[in-house]
Image (cartoon, rainbow, N blue to C red):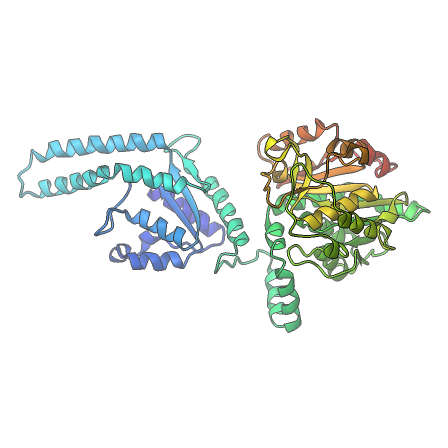
Amino acid sequence: MAEERRVVLEVVVDCGHMPIALERNAAEDRTVPAVIERTIQAAQIYVVIHGSRYGAIVAGSNQSFSHLEYEMAVQSGKIVVPFLLDDGDVKIKRGEMQKELDAAETELRKYASNSREYRECDSRAAQLRSELSHEQALWDFREQVKKDRFYQLFSSTGERAFSKYMVYRAVVEAEKLASEKRISGWIREPKDTSLSKTLEAVSRNRFLVDVVGAMAQFDALVPRIIGRPGEKEAAAAFFADVYLQKLIAYKRGSAEEGVSLFFESGSSTAYAAQAVGKRLAGRHSEIRISTNNVLAYMIFWLVHRIDCSLFPWGAPEQRYGAVFGCINDLVDESKRPSFPPSALTAEEEQAIQRLMVDYFSPAHWKGKGKPLLLGALSGLQLTEDPRFARSLGPHVGSMRNKVFKRFMYATGVPMMLFLDSKKIDLEVETDHCHFILEEEPSRGLTWTSMLENHPVAFCVGCSHEAGHLERQVKRFEELQLKVIRAGYSSGDTAFIARNDAFIQQFEEGMEIRV
């Protein structure tokens, strides 16, 4: 595996990390388990390249050094990145080892037992014999590496040959996982030097340390922000590209109340706020903005000096940094979801009504100018699944978030829901995934009714993987939604799928390109 190790080392260095290769230690150190353990403890990501050999055995045991290293890495909580030679290639190579052993044992008969040739041939035969005697251990180790984690298979030759691209892709995924899990010691140097300067300035200001520390306490928000940032940025940029200049022009030419945007709590809407904020910087009076998203509020008000109001009033809750106002008092956050979704309680309906009549509520925007609610989703179920009573449509991760989404729906204001493509038909976690809609046709709360009657659109961040964009677009077109695509040729891309009601109520007079 010398060539494969060389490729991994190059990629690790190219990605800005410091590689620790055990084979570069002195020969006597490589056989000391304590030295191996200290080396692994010093790392955050452990790469294992497993070929056709089980490997040299640790003295006094039946376990190879590679197997020992792997178990040490797993037990210490490291991110494990496995590369495994294809099973067929392994069997071929081990068959070649057996032939080599047979040839060596035949050759031994040619030499005198005290000759140099005999000793060299006998040593080679002993190594092969030892390796082949651990056949079952080899396959057991391979199954252990495969269990409960992503692994990358490679071949000796052909299209799946070991490559820098293969390793780069795996390292990028490992970086994301290390950040999400907040692995101890994981500090990636920012590519943007202005960020490192900002971090240094923050560290010198006690008040800023407190503010940043408070933001970091939103434990569910941080992983969401760093998860799939390319797709979220693409969706946010596409929304701004398609609508923002047209909204500004509408504001200037309209005698009505102009344009109003509400940014709901969520990582995708935070990216949308960032994209809009950059384009509106210095033009604070162009569009009325309000939000219950603590990140969006800081982006608009503090970063870009844009007027922004908080609705509803109150302190942000702990997990997502969302402001829910009276929902905090009237909605039981510990309430488990039901399938199919049950009707809201009297207290939950009361919370919605109180938000509707609030003086600053977006409910008062309906029919005035160009109002739009921008929301985020935990998932969007497009395929019926009997495991959760064939519930369809958007779902969120908390009961309070569900009630707030139902408030947004009740306003009747056009709504744009942001998500990345991974959230479409995402595995539903039945202990905390709350579907927003119910099966109440008379109240317009079904998924079908939403698509047919409520002005709704979906802004979807999507990768450029072969056929992926086309497959996702087709799913929305099958729902009779009209799709416009970003057409970004590099990086991630996006598309927006809208129903007729959204086009009629929000896009009228805007000449949106298709």
